[in-house]
Length: 529
Image 1 (cartoon, rainbow, N blue to C red):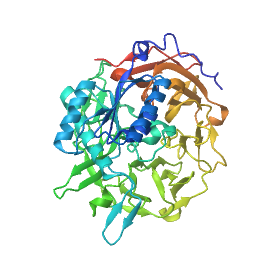
Image 2 (image 1 turned 90 degrees about the horizontal axis):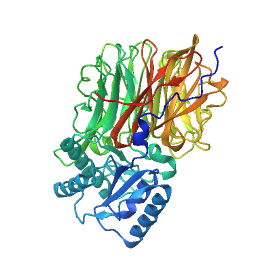
Image 3 (image 1 turned 135 degrees about the vertical axis):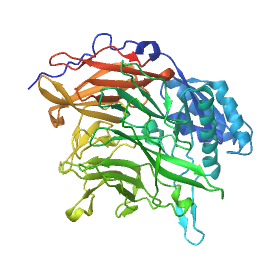
C-alpha cells in the first residue's frame, strides 16, 4: 500500500489565484417586487457586490424585508450597491421591459445574475380546463423570461460570459445556491480529449460556452456552443469511448403565445472542433405545451454497450425516460411508476453494465432508486438509506454509486447499492456537489480523487484508494477561490488537472506534480491563450 497522499497543496498553490481571490464581483438580482429578492439575496456568500433590480416598487412590508436581507448580507461580508433599483414598468417580459433591464445590466457589468423560475412547478391540475394551477404569481415567470432575454442580449453585446441562476419558488436559502437552482450547473464540466487536451463547458445567459486547449496547451477564448433558447443549466456525461455529451433544456416561444420546453443533446468528438449541433430529444408531455413546460432537468448515462438513457421528471412528478441505442435509434418516452420525485435526478452506470437512476423524493427527506431487474424491467428501490441535501447528488467513481452531502450533517458521503449505510467522506464544511475522477496512480496504486467547494469557498481535493472510501479520505485545501464546484479531469496518460472558476470570470487550472507517494499540485494558473 502506498503512503497517504501529501496534505500540502504544493508550493505556491495559491499562485495567480491570489490576485483574484480578494476581488469582489457584481451579482444582479432581478425580481418582480422587492420581497421576491429576499431568498435570492440570502444565498449570496461573502465577497459579492449585490445589486437588486425590481420591476415594481412593491408593498412597504416587502421593501422592509429586503432591507433586512441586505443588511444581513452586508454582515456576511457582501457589499450592497444601494437600495433596489425600481424600473417602474407594468409589463414583465415585453420589449420595453427587456430594454430597461438591458440598460441596467450595461450600467452594472455583472458577472452573475439571480432571477426567478420561468417555468415554476404546478400545485394542481384542472382536468376540465386542462390548466395547471400555481402558488406563485404568473408575473414571476414573466420576469424571469425578461431577465433571461436581457442577460442574453447583454452577453451577445459585450462578449463576456454572464452566469445565471433561476431560483425555484419556495427554495430555502439554507440549501445554498446549488439547492435553490431550477437548472443545475454541471459538476463534471472539465473533459480530457483523446489527445490529452482539455475542454471546459459552462452554461451562461447566451447558452453554453466552451474553452479548449490547442496543441501547445494554450486556452481559447470563450466560444459559444450555438443554440438559441438554451436555459442556464448543463449536464456533461462521458460515453464509453470518453467523448463528452452535453444535455440541456431549450425554451422557444410558440405562435399561439405558449412555449415549448424540450431536452436537447450535443456531443464533442474532437477538441479542436465545435460540438455537434443541438438535437432535440423532446419531452414526455410534449403534446400539451402547458404540461410540457414543466419538464425537469435531464439526467443521463451510457450503459456498457453504448446505449444512452435519458431521464427527466415529468408533469406528474414521476420519472420518464428514453433510450438511444448504440446504432442511433430512439425509443419513445416511457414512464417509471413509483414515488413522486423532486426535480433532481442522477443516472449512473452500474457494476452490471446497466444504467440506474436515483432521485430525491418529493416533499419527503428520502432518496429512491430504480435499476434494471429481471428481464430488463425497472425495479424501484425505496430502501436507500440516506437523504441528500438538495443540489448535491452526483455520480461516484465507483460503478453504480452516488456522491451527495447528507441532508442533516452536510458531510460529503458516498453510497453504493447493497451497503447498509452511506460512507462518510470527512468533508462537512463545504457546499454544493462533488465531482470525481478515478485512475489516478500513486506508487503503483490507483486512487479516486474528489473535488469540492470547501470551507470559505475554496477548492478542496480529497483522495482515497480506488473502490475503498472506507479507508479514509485525505483532504487538502488548495486555496483557489471557486465559485460553484471545481472540476477535475484525467487524461489517458494519467495526467490529473483541476479547474476552478473564480471572481472576475477567471478560469484557473492546476496540474498535479509527479512526486512519489504524494498528491501535490503546481501553482494555479489562469487559462490564457
